[in-house]
Image (cartoon, rainbow, N blue to C red):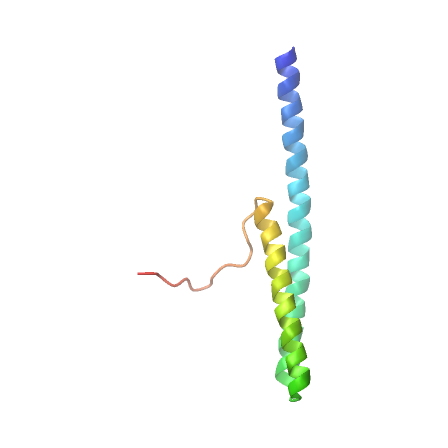
Length: 94
């Protein structure tokens, strides 16, 4: 009886951890979608502007957004899911 209760508790804990992991993956993926849209908008704004100071500010914002995207990707990986961003054309080392 004790062994059965321990196994049931372990199964419930594993299910709970899986649920929490799925929540983290969902939040991270939604965050990645928003950040991708923001990067696209920033790219459009960078191409349109000719003011050097404004362009420098946009590049700094672009850099911060890219870092945020990497953090969201790290959360996906820590949650046990595969990262969504992958190389389109992998380069062979040798």
